[in-house]
Length: 238
Image 1: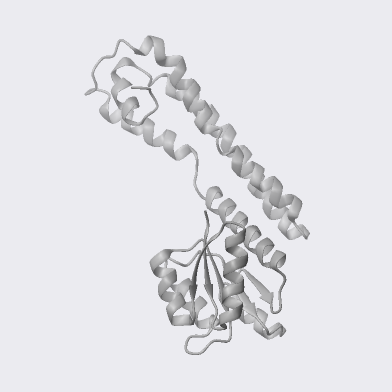
Image 2 (image 1 turned 135 degrees about the vertical axis):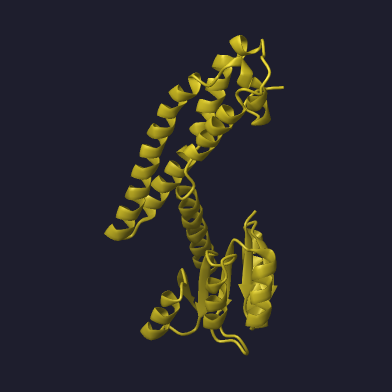
């Protein structure tokens, strides 16, 4: 369940937003001003932040600037809630890292759609920056380092193909990223967005091919001496 932080000094708007989001199964925390919102963001690490611009004390721009300057909160998707629609205001927010603007008054579906879209894009971006081949490389390195120390296992002849099957299935999991990319491609509203998600899809497909090719290199390492290490990596059943 995604956690949404609402920073809004107007009580009725804050309560309405909380009710809307909880009805569609988001978990919600709220703050009545910028200082409190900043602290909640750092303590709770929400999945997305909705923040008013005009607030006493720290305004929305200052909150966003503080969040973007902290590595722990720098990448949290951030949507401004504003009664202002001036081009200069929009530019100012985007320059310091806002992901979207929603102008008051707003419709419930508008809020929900904006949040779901930003969460989906953030998830896709996070996955695209995590090479799936990392686990294979780590496994190969550890096998080589510990090869001389591991005990012989008589199970290997029976489980060799099971290991490869489990590993192959695990390496196919990034298909979820490709599916998400296809969804976002369909939702794209301009050529720039389409090119962005096409590029991600191409990267994921190339990554899949590379990883599946690496499976063959593991065959040479699947010796009886490595069985214990494979169990430690939970690639074998106990």
